[in-house]
Length: 640
Image 1 (cartoon, rainbow, N blue to C red):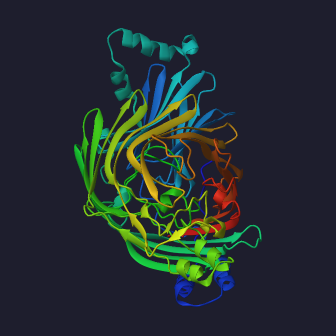
Image 2 (image 1 turned 90 degrees about the horizontal axis):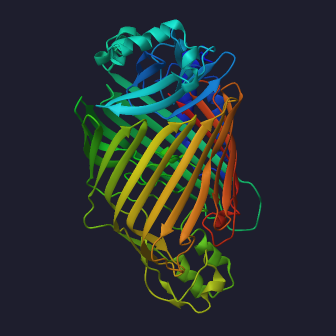
Image 3 (image 1 turned 135 degrees about the vertical axis):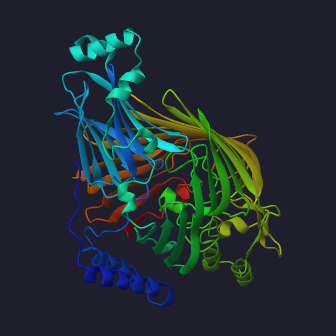
């Protein structure tokens, strides 16, 4: 269950293979090579990286600081202390009986640790790396006593803890051993459960006192205060079917992220980003930017953060109406993972830690919009409209008119935003309330130069019969809005339950005239995830979006839009080859997409994803408009 790493490659090979990958990256945006040769770079980089097994690159920032086992009458709790919040999953294995908790992007300082507990319920507790970026905690249970358990995560005065709480089933108290019954009797004599817990705590890792678990450990003193890490990512796509439509048949994305940090308080990173769309309307774009530059401090009563950064609100996966602080890069639509799509922005804020809740305040001084293409790509707002008009049987003057069509964006005069978030935990339910005085990240279309049109989806020559053509640009601005939200997360009966709801005072929607209207909206999403005894992970989320004072000219959305989305995954070869299915079904219009894919992680630090995106629906639906854009993709990322 605890996975061990493979030996390191030679320093010579590692040095020159990474150097060659860097050369290829430079050639991608400086050369005029054909698209097929660009696609071949993916395979070459994969071959260069393949022998890099077990190289000693930087581990995730989040670490297990300590693990303690607290024992009481008919209840035993494993408490895991982390440096920061982590995504959790858990399941049960039988013969022998075990509770398994996985923590994403977490490292255990010691490779493999175990401690005999000799408890009534828990016989042994073990911790180690299941994969390079996933820590696993295993509780070996006493099979002779029926038990129940819950897993929860909370923050107390800036300290993050995961509690694995085990207790005897309510109908099994009479079967407890005599020693446990004596503990119950002792409580009846006036002792407290805290007395018993304090006398039977077991520290699994560094053995320090509870107040010292966030002090710098011996392990961390052995490494430099400075750490350098990064990621090389290459992703290519190719259309799954050949058709005569105007579209990008291929695409290529190459990202190199270099990050340096000092004692986890200061982080500075740079991003080299190249994006290419091939065949029809071939385009390429390269950016070398400062990605994040942030400083943070966390004390017992307060914390401060400042700089260019990504800050996550909300609890749900892949779609989060409460997570509104950072805009998104939508140039590849939903192909990149949700976290990859987030764009860092300059912000500052404070966290105040009270006994029963945490209050966060955020100020964003400069506006940053989401990143969209307006024309010339499969995922652009107006897609390939210009070239479709060029290929249509229309007058030459009309072709020239659309060819010269431009977009004029007007940024808001007052760019500042601010937000508040209050979070707390009651009875193992983590919840929060948010308010964001924001500027919409998505564009609001004030005017479109072609008048007197009514479009059901994408414009074509047939929609121009009665059109009136003006000498204008497409006028775009970004509007202010208020967003109030609620979020929660808990564990119940082996299921992780989470949800969000957000009310927005005004949201912009594009209409059949290619201009925008603004309407109040309410959206909520409720989800559950569960891992079965056979280690099959299910994630289901139901979303409902309601548009108040609905305008029938709004494209792609009904007054009530209902969606079912989520993920199903399982390991098919040990824990290094995973099969998964991402899906989203819009219930009211019948459109949907699915993305079956395989994820390979056997080689340390290297992740390869091979899969396909399939879109189905009517042309007038948001998903259905992409039904001819099914594609196969390969995504390779190498962390160092």
